Length: 356
Image (tube, rainbow, N blue to C red):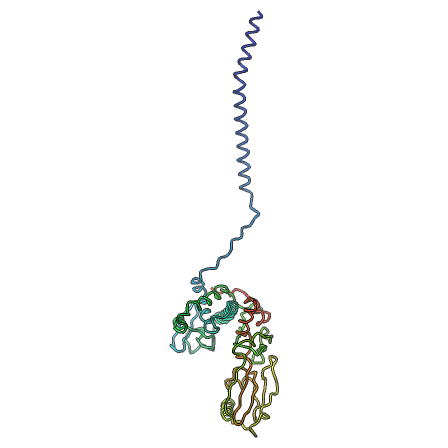
C-alpha cells in the first residue's frame, strides 16, 4: 500500500515537472504579445498627436529672370523710333532705374528709386484714361522725362559696353528685393517726385508745383552737400539773360541800369529757394527764372561783372520729393531703402501694388 502511494506522488511530481516549463513559456508569450500591442498603440497615438512646433521654411527669392517677367504689360512709346514696345512691369522698372539713377549707386538707394519708379507706373496703369497720351496710340508712357526716362535693353548694352553685366546685376537686385512694392498714402499710389540733389533741404510741393501733396513736405537733406552736383555756376552776358527772360515772359525786359540793385529777391520758400524775385521791371518766380535761364536750381545768387552776370546755384533739380544723391549718401551711412523713402515721402506706407 505504501509503495502505491509513493508511486502516485512520484507520478504527479514528474507530471508537474513536465507541465511547468510549458506554462511558463505560454505566459511569457502572452505577456510579450500584450507588451507589443501596448507599444504599437503608444506609437500610433504619438504619431496621431498634432505637432505644436511650426517649422519655418525660409522664403527664397525667385530667380531674377522670373521677376522681370512678372506683372502687367507696360506699353512704352519710343519717341526717337516712333513706335510702341511692350515690357513686363518689373522689366520696365529696371530699365527706368537704369535711366534715372547711376547704376553704381548703393543698393539701398537703387531700391528706393525702384519703389518710386514702380509707384509712378502703377498709378498710370490703374487709370482708365490717360489724357496726355492721345497722340501716342495706346501707350501708357513715353520714354522721356515727361513721364519717366527709359532705355531699351539694346540701348543700355550699347551705352554701357563691357560694364553692362555688372551694372544690370545691381539694378536687377534692387528690383528683385522690392518686387511688387509701391508707396501709398491713404491707400493710393503717391506722386513719387524725385530729383538729383537738394540745397540741404527739399521743397514743399505747393511751393514749386501748382498742387499740394501732404507727403511732399520740406525735410532736411544735409547729405547732399557731398554731391558733385551740389554747387554750379553759369555765366552769360546781361543781354543774353534779358533775351531769354523776354522770350519766357513774351515781353521786353527793361533795366534802368546794369546793377545788382535791379535784382531783388522778394520771398524765399520753405526750402530756402527763390520763391519770387524782381528783375528789371518784371516780377518772376524762382522756377520761371530757373527754367528760362537753364539754371540747375531755383536756389540761386548772382554776381555782375561789367556786362556779364554769373549765377551760382545750390542743388540740382526742382527739389521736391526724394533727393537721389541724398538717398545714395543716406544708404552709405547705413540707412535702408524703407528709411530713405519714408524720410523723403512723409507719412507713406510700402504696400503691394495689387495688379495682375
